[in-house]
Length: 320
Image (cartoon, one colour):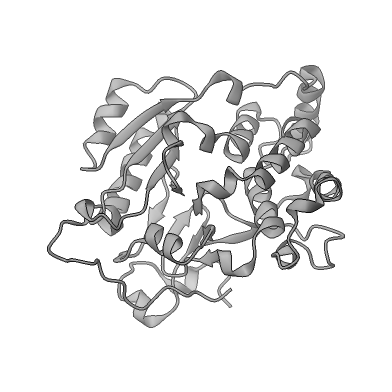
C-alpha cells in the first residue's frame, strides 16, 4: 500500500494552542497495562509526548484487570498535561465464558506448552487476546470516543509527528492504520480460517465485493496466508469495531472457542476482519511513524522523513 500522508498538514490557526483547537478528532490513546509495567510505560509516554502529544493533548485511557495503584496513577498523570483516565476491566471480559470447557482448555494449553508454541501455555495471554479482539472498545471509558491509538508499555516512537493522525484518519475516511505487518504462527490458529470461512457463508451480507481479501489470502479466500497487521500499534475507527459486521464476526469466533482451545490472537482477528470488511482506500500505512515493539521496528526510509527521526532505516522490518 502506498502512503498518502500529505507532505504538510497545518493546524487551522497556529495562534490557538493545539489542545484547544476544535478541529481535533474525538480520539484517545488506549493502553492495556499492569501496575508492574509502570517504568516501561513511563518511558513510552515520555517519547509519545515529546514526539507528538505535547502538541495535541489527546487523552490517555489506561485499562487493567486489577485496580491501578495510587503510585501508578500519580506517576503516569505526571508525564502529560492531557486528561488521564483509569479503568478496571469487567470480570466477564477477562474470564471464561459459560460455553468453554475449562478442563479441555487447560489440557490444550498444556499440550501447546509442551510443543513450545509461543505463549502456548499462558491463560492470561489468551484473556488479553480475547479482550483486545472483542471487548476493549466496549469499556465504558471508550464509549464516547470515535478513534483510538493503541499503545503498549515499552514501545518506542522514533519520529516527530507534526500533524494529527487521528484527524487524518477522520478527514480521509480511513478505518484502520498500521506500521508493521508480519506472518502469524500457524500453530496458534489451526482452525481460525476454517471458522472464518463458515462465518462468511452464514453472513454473506457483511462481505463487500471490493474488500481487501487479497491481503489475507493468495488464492481468492480458500486459505489464509498468515499475513497480519501487528496490532500492538494500530490507529483505528472505533465505529468499525462497533459495526454489525465486526460484532457478528467476533461473536462467531468467540462461540467457536478458539481463543481458549487454541491461541487465537487479536492481530490475525483484526487483520482478517479488515480484509473481509474494508477496502483498500479505508486502510492506511503510517510509513512516517517510526516505531519499535521488540524485536521489530519500522523506520521511515524516505530521506525527508529521516530528518525527523532517530532510527536507522536499514534496520526497518521488511526493508528490501
